[in-house]
Image 1 (cartoon, rainbow, N blue to C red):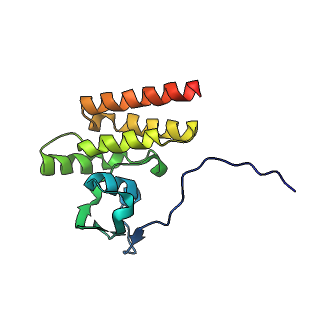
Image 2 (cartoon, rainbow, N blue to C red):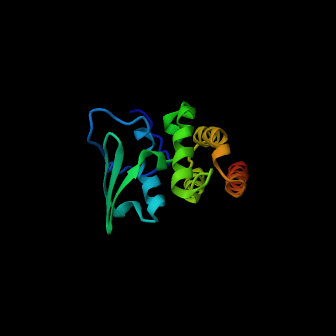
Image 3 (spheres, helix red, strand yellow):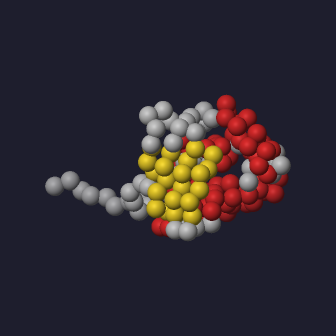
Length: 160
């Protein structure tokens, strides 16, 4: 009988994201439940469904029903590093909506939370690669907080 090894892994839950259009938006790959939860300050359990249409995302949660632009979602490392062509979409959105050239504050919280949740060195490196690519989209304060979190995670990983 083969030996079994147990690995600490995140709990798996069924996805609440569904794709309602045969043609997907190029940024549909950025839509995650974690990002939606941070965007609106709710728990993931409160999200009932996330519908991705051709041009917008519909979010239905407890006491929340909103249509959201794909340009509001930050890129996770699972999409790779080939997203530099969408920078103009983000910048245009931030300039119009928040009169800012930087990403919204909740992006920084998203990245800090995801870095703290990393389980392996490979995941950590992938998150760092994404952060380096979008550094210009983050304010100086946001970048400083993210790098402090990275340093804390590195120190903790080295001491383990």
